[in-house]
Image (cartoon, rainbow, N blue to C red):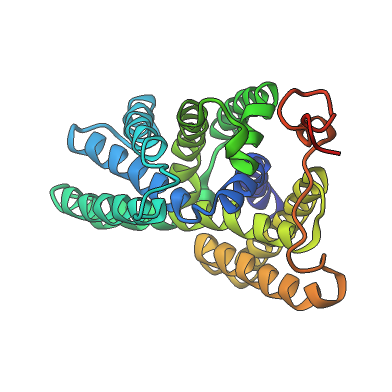
Length: 292
């Protein structure tokens, strides 16, 4: 049985490796459902591909998903308006609902529509192959390197957008990279797992961490516990892996919430950025002129 468990566990951990970091951005930006919206937009792309006779999991299907998320990146980057009376979360919710409805409508035109809708929600993690895992890991490594190289503007736009000189540009680049990640993960893990692995570890991290590095470690650790427990329980009890894995993330969140009064940081304590990000924008680590 061990040889059956290892591939989905490794695939889930690879997904967690980048989702945990992106989740910190999502929580701090207060766009909680942007990952759900992106996941449904990616699912819409694969559903359109299905109408053209393109099988799921193929390169062509992935390109359709990435094309759809590119449009989503444009929408989300240009609807971030600090002075608007309409919160961006409303736009994100509308995109999610419309994309979900479109997936249902289009899937109904295909012979395998019902199965496709089910797979978009729960994924096919249990059947993942090593080739897909390696491909996904390589893509995530490239995206991770991209974020590391541009960590300063990305963190500025997330934590201190008032310091950024071009919020929409960096928002667009962030959402493009976000969409690429989602396009790969949603076909394997499904919409529900994608949302859980992005949001739950990040929420747990904000419960207990004061620094960005610690937050990332806490997110990875809590997500790993949820993955090992969820996949292990699904094999032990012979239950559907996707739904049980999502429930496992929920259980970890409940456990963290119970421990927070005893181990968590004081309410209202912000996560501190790395030293070079604490400056007023010049990267020297010194406060802006006129401040001490």
